[in-house]
Image 1 (cartoon, helix red, strand yellow):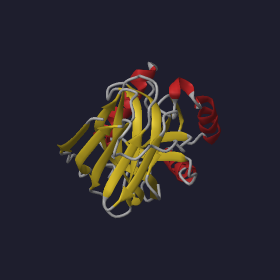
Image 2 (cartoon, rainbow, N blue to C red):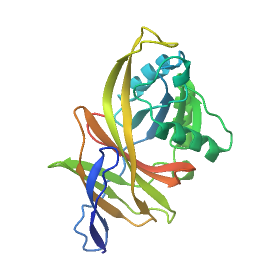
Image 3 (cartoon, rainbow, N blue to C red):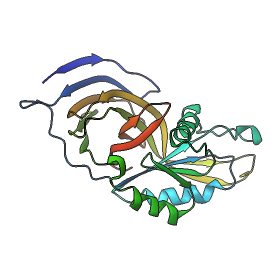
Image 4 (cartoon, rainbow, N blue to C red):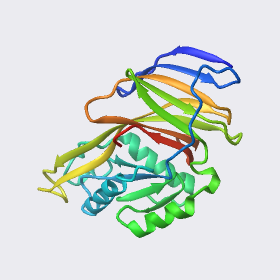
Length: 251
């Protein structure tokens, strides 16, 4: 077993003090539990998009399923049409464009959903999203790696089990459970829209090569916030299939 401590991370107010270990026969890290998440849905949305509120509402419905991770990632490229999205980040715009590059189709629009890092659909098309969830089960190893995520004494414990010997990154996302915005201008002027599981920061904390690993991170989250963890193939520029995912309570 190898063990390292002391890597400090403080990007976007996310986490600090990372400890990681490779799980061996006498590991001090907890054994990872089997993954329970059956689908990951990422919605790229915008306060300046008149077609987005139905997708935002659908995402809030999908998020109620305990075996699903449903996330809102507000983009910033519609800010020029009259309203500056108060939750948007260029990081999320870059992630959406990176997915399009990885798929090779160049499709970037709102509302757009990406399921399990693999396929896209119109964010308000529940039938297509549900079909994509069914089709993606196990595809390219989607959500096949066991993962266990717990919180105790302001420490986030992440245990990832062994899997296929393929390279992947471990990502932690800080998420606010609900945010209601009164939109003052633009296509949705005068509307009050509630956004569910809004991502506020994404941070890569390590690499994975198929061996079981464990991490402990000190939490720096605010009120009504939680965490999501992804094990995802590919790179920041070309993200691929999500091999494992977990969420803290309430998301």
